[in-house]
Image 1: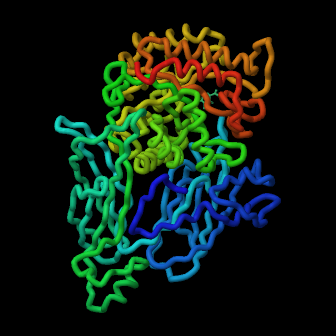
Image 2 (image 1 turned 135 degrees about the vertical axis):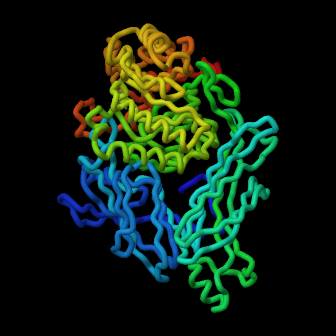
Length: 584
Ligand code: ADA
């Protein structure tokens, strides 16, 4: 499964994932041995490869002809793609989608090889030994698309509330796969009703972006309570090339798209459907407003992690996590610390769960941020994240650089570039970054929202309410974040599932329950605070190479353990979250 709705009616799309592939490690004692696996797959789920750091290859044959695109929703963490033994693409970062175009394939069976590399090296500035696991494998869906002479790469649809009603700012990118210049038109439909038609010309092999604002009028708004989603679709019609050699010649050049006989004036040769929700998110003074109402965020930080699947959670497991979060009274999830699977976002759109989505980074020091690859890799992640996810109404905040060096001048320059990059791609959402630099952070003048990760009653024994107030007051009096919305984007405590003791000592479930009682109350009672994300939803695996050790080589601050078994704190969080409304 790739999305929770059908994105194409005309384009022939075949899911290559959710089926059997062959996996073979390229290094180590099992090099060359072949294992049948279902993709998505992290090789750490295979008994022989629980701790394998290296390169592995996933192989799959597929039938096709003509112009095709292979879409990879996630390969962890560095990918090299080969078709019929020839390299056709590469990609860095496990958490963003990428695609490769291949033109003019012969009709027949072709071999796809996906090489995944989960090793740490100086080449990798973001996947480093860390307090989460960098898995190895094809962690999300894979799709084969059969295309003609041109195709629609994306539709961006950003809702805009105006005096006379709602409009949609659209941008549709069309790519040519032809060696000829093409002319045609693009038809936009909102819920199946024609909304605009734009003529377009495509230079051979080039792309064009067609921008158009369409009036939507009186539509039903998207909110946590009413998750009304609208389909917006684009149809690409092209004037046929020279028919003098007859239709067969055209059919062959059009690949899988056979041209109907009455196609002289242009034929619909590709389409794409996306979804949007009409909602407005903005900041006003110290408030975050969703459709004009002051939000109280009650959320969890969630890693994509599971003992049976690694980071390649199947659809059912993703949905189960959301069911648990809703049972706990949460209204938001933070995709700590990287862009998430689009299936997760589709489900949040449909179930009214707000999302803070952030680019990939966790706790990188100044030295790590000075890795020559850091800025490019971090900015590429932002581009790919927003290009792929801009339409999701559930995403209300774009985050960057969790706990990186925001107390340094160099760090400030990186933060500024990345905030500016977000603004250049999307002006419809506030930005923020989770800081652990306490009273030394110098970046709070840049984003719309000030966010902190705080661990009173865990990493230090300051009473939670006192510590939250101290930091909040400092922001108001001594930082450029004064008067902005204030979020606590991490707060929590560790507990080993099943460790029960009346001594209330740290790592016991009793201690975690008590600490969270103080922390949640301390944050949500703090005047001017717009909300909280508990660290964290479930226990997760961490890199065994990380400098710090943790019990079980896990981060044990989950409200549930890695098998989603409840700890004592579950009922504390559930009682408290349900006792606070979604709005302030
Ligand atoms: C940091 C970090 C999290 C996690 C947490 C912890 O705030 O952002 O990823 O490592 O600390 O468990 O200490």
